[in-house]
Image 1 (cartoon, one colour):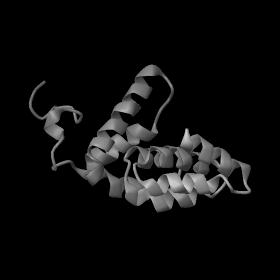
Image 2 (image 1 turned 90 degrees about the vertical axis):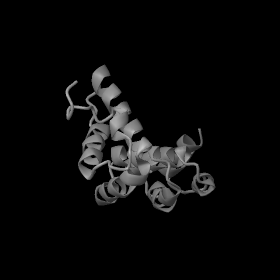
Image 3 (image 1 turned 60 degrees about the horizontal axis):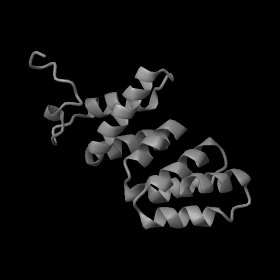
Length: 139
């Protein structure tokens, strides 16, 4: 491949010089899955890339997720495994609906011990969706 055409998943793009545009590109791929095998593989590769660049990607991903908290954006936040996302994810978990389910799974992926505490606490919620989401996160 000629210089300048290096794929963004190559080792040449793993340093601190990752651009916002690259993060946005991978975020778009991570939240856009049409269901066929190639699209799902592309989504997974984008999620891995974002996780590998979590220090740079996290603020941008969180900004998008807070502006429009869709299940797919919440999934990306969870894949970044940032302890600083725990409080926000726990708040989403307590709201019944699709964001609750995604937040439960994201908290289940978190290395933060407070994430597990939030999931256990949600088991006592009155809303069945919240309890189900907590169980999904604890699996």
